[in-house]
Image (cartoon, rainbow, N blue to C red; front, top):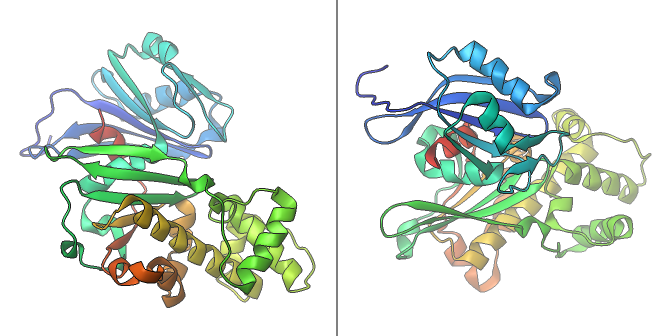
Length: 328
């Protein structure tokens, strides 16, 4: 235990995604901030069930006694007693975990809600500044931050601070809002996606699957052979000389910036906005481009106000663990 750290009861925190899993033992320092130890990660496919992964972690972490509290951020709709992961075959059941590990208190939360909750607890080095802005230009009794995360899907939430300086997360399904094209290229891509999907949402562009959708559409627009690439390959080839992959990343980044700008407008989040998620991190160079920032700020009569909104990219992979520890 480090000097000044006060630990009453350790907490197991977990970030359980469709592809990867992370666990840590969380405690609280003298300032009430979460502190993580024994951070461990693994591909989910290495384990048959969630409980097996947790048992393996506890063996590695070797706490003197299994923590009596657990907070797990899970990638799926959170019910009272169980969670079926969206992109994983696991179903995580509360009663099974209590019986197997002896938890006295066990909390399930959505993984994106945990991501959003981590924001006020993280140091400045956990973020890349996309627009400095000036939040002091607007007064608010309840500062609100718009949060959007592009990964397997497109998450959106609001982070709200009340008068007692406590933070609350309001999850939304804003990623499923309809996408509206604004110029010729956007209209061409929208038409092709509409033919394929019928309903075109922002998530159909700003996500891993979205990268693949846009890449396929741009191949057709440019009259090129339909060479299928997954999202990872698209971002990798954009680092080389694949012009369609570069155009795909630019288009997706610009659309994501348009989306988070719309989220600021609709929620009044003048104090700031944060982008998160694996796809967002892979697009960080494109999100910093002038064309992307213009998509964020160019909101007609509200453009000048949008130019004062601080915008950051969250780059700390342990953020959902911090958020889970802060929500117990």
